[in-house]
Length: 344
Image (cartoon, rainbow, N blue to C red; front, side, top):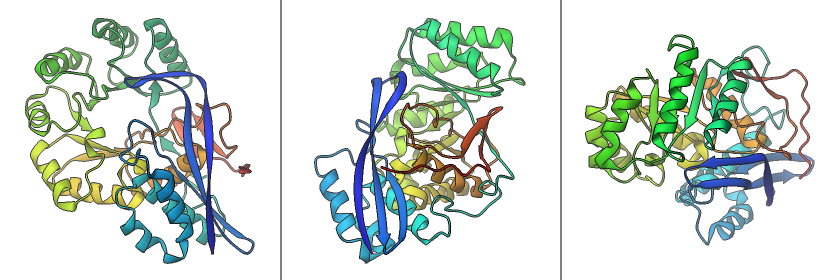
C-alpha cells in the first residue's frame, strides 16, 4: 500500500465575502491510497486562517502521513491529533479504499439515491444589494432555511436585510440562521442579540471571538436568541478540555466541521458529549471540494439528524470535481447518474 497527496486550487465562481476577507480561491489537498489496481481518495481541507493546522509544517506532516500509510488509520489518527484536516482526509481515503465503490463510503438510503438531506441556503457577505440578490435566488429555488453571514457590513444595514426577509416570509415559512464569525464585541454583543431576536431567528453562530469562555458563557445564559458554537471548538484536543468547554459555556447548539475538529471520529466525540448535556448540533462543510463534501454528506445522513445541515457549498467553484451530488428544493441528494470525474 502506498499513498501520495496532490494540492489543488479551487476557484470561486464569484468572490465570496467572509469576516476574514474576500475569498477568490481555496487551496485543498487530495490524498490518494493505492495498492495494485485499487485506489482510495480523501480530501485534507486545511482552511488557511481558520484551521488549527494552518502552520508551517503542514505539508511536511502530510508527506509523513503518506510515507507511513502502512501504519494504518488508528495509529495515524493518534499521531496526527494536532492536524485535524489530515485526520479527516485519511478517514475518507481509507473508507474509499475499503469500499466497493470508491466514492460511496457509507451504504445508506442517501448513497442509494432514495433519500436526501435538508440543507440551508448560504448567503455570503457583501453589499446590501448583493445580499438581497442572493436571498431572492435562494427563495426562488425552494430553500426554506437560509443562513446569512453577518458582521462585514453595517449592522443597521444587516437589520434591514432581515426586515426585508421577514416582510416577505414569516418564521414558519422561512427559518433564518445568522453567523457572526466572532464579529461582535463582548460589551455590545447582548444588545445586538436582543435586536436580532426580534426577527425570530433560529440561532446565531459564534457571536463573539472564540477563546473568551466566560464572556461566551454569560451570553449563552442571558441570550434571547439560541447561540451555536463553531470556531470555539477548533484546536480543543483533549477530552477533558472539550468537556470543560461545554460545561462552562453551556451553548444551545454546537456546529461540527469535520475538517476542523478531527474528522468523523472527532465530530462524533463532540456529539456524544453534547448529547449528555442536552446540547443540540448540526454538521457544516468547510468549503471542501465535492470529494470532501460527498464524504461529509454520506456520514451526516447516517447520523439521523433531521435539522437542515450546512452542506450547500458544492456549486461555489468553477473547477470543482464533477460528481452526482445535486441540490433541489433546499435538499442535497446523490443522483443515480454516477458521474464522478476525479482526474487530478
